[in-house]
Image (cartoon, rainbow, N blue to C red; front, side, top):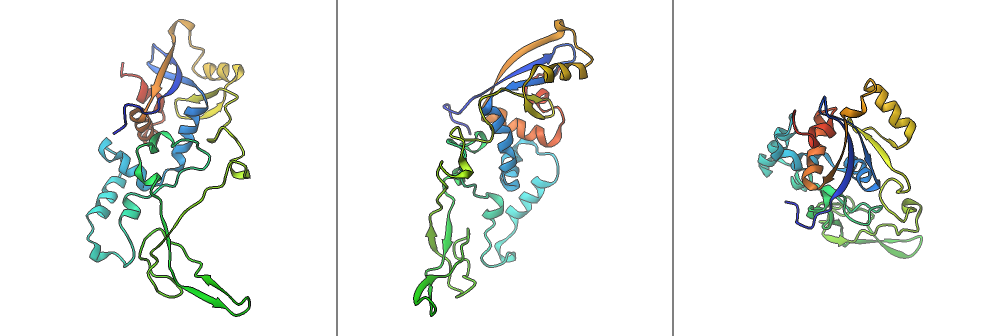
Length: 243
């Protein structure tokens, strides 16, 4: 459940009141980063998020099948939790957790393990640990078969690296406004682009158009995730009540 202090993202919608549809939305960097961040979510995590939302399709049933499968049928060293609740390391380019990860404990508990055994290299006359790492504690080391129980610490690149050269963090730059269509096509906002979109709707009369600002929190973000998987009118489905 989202906290009372959850992040709220702002989105301005242009609505056709006559047909009760969103023509397009005007969004800043924070909302666009959220949308693009949906592509980084593991399918197991997405399925777990949507199970209580009457998930469309069979993935929910597959998820429940794995959850109900006895461990006597799984290979040694395989943890069902790896599929059911995949850990998600913090995204390096984000200064704060993305919207749908803010309440996810796995983002802060990502762990890696190696074995404690080492080997001696005759050429360098030095000792080295075996070069293997796993996310599942107790996995046998491929070299010595010792259980890999030594916890390692993952270090993200700092902001001076090429991977995270933008001080703002996230995926897109914040110097422009972006247009988001009802089917989640994202483009930089421009007058020409707006006119083009309006012409696709047969030049709607100004009188039937309405500007509407909505707030997007965890609940709305979850609804957008679900709508994006089953609809081509995601913004309308989430933010407009049926006429």
